[in-house]
Length: 338
Ligand code: PEP
Ligand code: MN
Image (cartoon, rainbow, N blue to C red):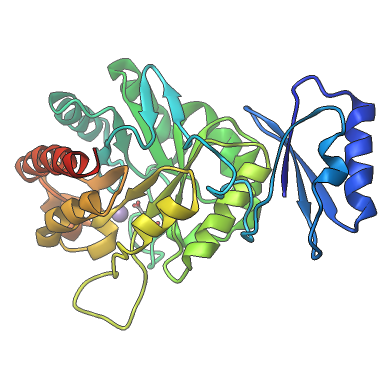
């Protein structure tokens, strides 16, 4: 059960609501976010909401039977709008494209990517500076100093920075240079990291764990929300299956299901999802038709020379064609849905 509290609720009023809930053996958690103030009540028995409905300071009460609560669609009338500032939003009203290299490599590479993005009116640039790599000998990123240059160049160009944070201690040091904190698939259940990101006011993009269920992804989002941050984007990026013909199995089933279960925007990462350049476009277009609110794709001025994930990275002409077809596909989908 989610109890939305009034902005001006007094401490006494709040305490009497909590006492009334605890009386029926429900456990209460208080959540304060940048947008709202809630009590999350969890218990076994049927709760008669008339027992608290008359109490002062309550705005609304919602019964939510899902195991995750705040990220569930069952209570929120309007879908979440992740506002990044400067007129840039990720939400269900439009189609978002995030693009850029797997890894930030050099200032020149950042400049080239920004030029490419500007040509296509894309306002979110991806690029890892801390790279989770299977081998410790592989390129592991340019680190915080590289992020500072990445951020400065993007700010000057009016572009938002999307980059992966790998551990709790990085949240504070990266904070001022990031617009969307990306949580990678390998950290999908790093609950301490999720807690910490929930205490910030920055957008958080949660990748699905490569062996994670849809419910586990939603619970990861619940961690961030319940720590105080409602700016969450869900990202399907493929799961590991028995199939070896491609890198991951992009689970497009997850898209309409996540959109029905949650009010959060859902984007798809076809680059990691399939992992092979030739199939990025068809899978991105399929994701769009499946209802994705956007995509995140790896692009590079010369994928053959990329320091990571070149095999799944598009060059600029390939990316241009993809963007055009994404817009056309999204328009087609909208014509179906009205
Ligand atoms: C990435 O986006 O470069 C990345 C490492 O993603 P994932 O965590 O989905 O593998
Ligand atoms: Mn990558």
